[in-house]
Image 1: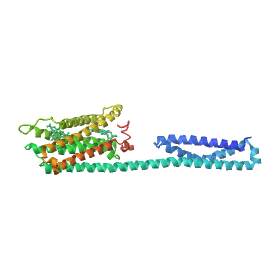
Image 2: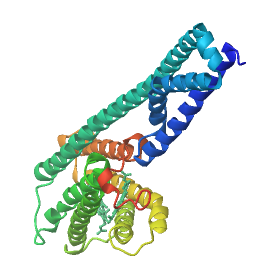
Image 3: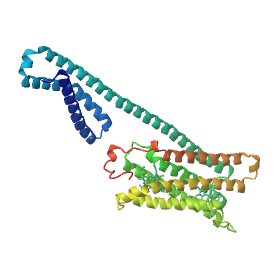
Image 4: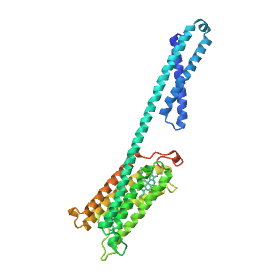
Length: 353
Ligand code: HEM
Ligand code: HEM
């Protein structure tokens, strides 16, 4: 005849088996519903720990009554003891289950708070970046307007040149930076829309860059005698940035907007796309710094005496650096990366398309 302890062990193992069985069923279901398994499992444990032990206990009691009628009729105290033990077992299971349930909930709340804090940091830095960018554009406009004599057409090559720093700053720096930030800055917008925005802003940046190049080449070719082209380091690095940008555009467009590229190829190309995207951006910033220095040395006669024009040019250069540093940080910080939305799912035939 089984002793009370044997029964307790038997009941315990039945409850445990039931817990394991139901918990794993729940995991399968919840994983298909895309709920993290870590939160699903403890829920299942609580459900089972609260309900089935009673059933297990009653099954056990029935089994006892079926298998041993003598025990049923002659030893009512054993039954009471069994019930008490079962209840104790059940409440132990319940509290263990609750504990197991609370821990992942706490972890998930902490995780959510971390994520919110990360997003708040991102938003603050994003706003600072935009303010920097807008100040940069205002400053270059003021510098050109107040200190370089404004802008002009082909009839006045000296003034036509002034479009060059203005459009390069708006196009190859401000718009370039904003275009690569678009996925992170507008994280709740559908991926497809973001791709069009990314490609569209880059295209606008490219058009402004071409105009900026035409005006600077005009300013060298139209005067009599003409000024030689492409002699300076600024022009070499600047042209390098424009070429990287152009190639990147063609590759990005064919890979991610035009049909034809295999999914595996798109995924394999993405790290290169990001690397060369940032490389071109850094080259553009470096080139703009050299351009500013050149122009300041050519045109500001009292540069060495801290004239307002010189201080303005230096401040503009500092803003290029700050804007560039912020954009690169925001685009490379892993925790700021946009997470796919459910509505992107149709597009997500693979990672990082
Ligand atoms: C990302 C921005 C920039 C790029 C890609 C760029 C590119 C170029 C290129 C390719 C040239 C050669 C034109 C020629 O030889 O006829 C040039 C000339 C010039 N750029 Fe820029 N530029 C940029 C920004 C600036 C800025 C902000 C200034 C500031 C005023 C500037 C000032 C000059 C000057 C003074 C020249 C004529 C002297 C030279 O050829 O080096 N550039 N730039
Ligand atoms: C000169 C042109 C381009 C440059 C400089 C550039 C640069 C970049 C950079 C730096 C990123 C990383 C953004 C991030 O991690 O948040 C990126 C991502 C991406 N770019 Fe471009 N891109 C260019 C053109 C294009 C074009 C034409 C397309 C076509 C739609 C494209 C599609 C993408 C996609 C799909 C991503 C992935 C975004 C993600 O992480 O989910 N790019 N690009």
